[in-house]
Length: 311
Ligand SMILES: Cc1ncc(COP(=O)(O)O)c(C=O)c1O
Image (spheres, rainbow, N blue to C red):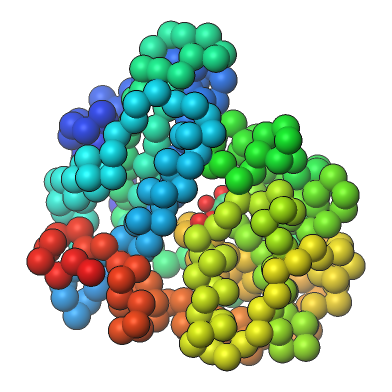
């Protein structure tokens, strides 16, 4: 595994990795007042390029998170994309990578401070995750998913992630590779960092947005590819816990996790306990899309080196 990247981007400037610091008294640190996005860049071998997948949609969601958190003036898209390109080129990243884009309340204000605003970007090379090929065994958590009227999962802020952390720590201690949280009313919600799909009778099922999930860009991508490219029906609705056990296949999806097959839930095998055919078809379509292999979906890719080939 490569070490840390040489450069980070802080407030629109390139800085050495060790200099990307914020003060312990910032509301970002004290209260979790930090909106963020996790994105992926993929190598485009045909063009000797690296492009970021669905950057526009990630920026739109970041602006929504900042709007709900009432952040003061924050950087615009052009500024953030410019800083990202500069960072990728400064670190000479031409292969697959993970990108973290963060905007926070800086200074030393109290809980309702809305500025000044700080922002930063990390871009780190990332190798293929074996769990995408091999699948994972998950548990249903005894922790409940945070609710929209308390800590809305629809906005992507760091403070929300303590809910996922608690469930993840419990699942790890119990020997599982992942965990699914239920809403307060007992419906399937999501995992600490990804959305969930089930396969029943050859159709895809996924929890509705109102079931306390992040409005995932990968979930939207999977729905689009299933319906438009694969001719697979897909339904968005509330899902009962025991439907997890009744599914023939399941997978989780997210920018970071990509498409990870779920082989069992609470040690109950799904189907024959191996990666199922529908999951494989979705994976194939997804990886074609992110690597530029679907001509109709190239508008989802933003090149990082050569702006001439953009869109
Ligand atoms: C809680 C949560 N749910 C779902 C997702 C998947 O969202 P996306 O597909 O936009 O990466 C993520 C990852 O960002 C997440 O953190």
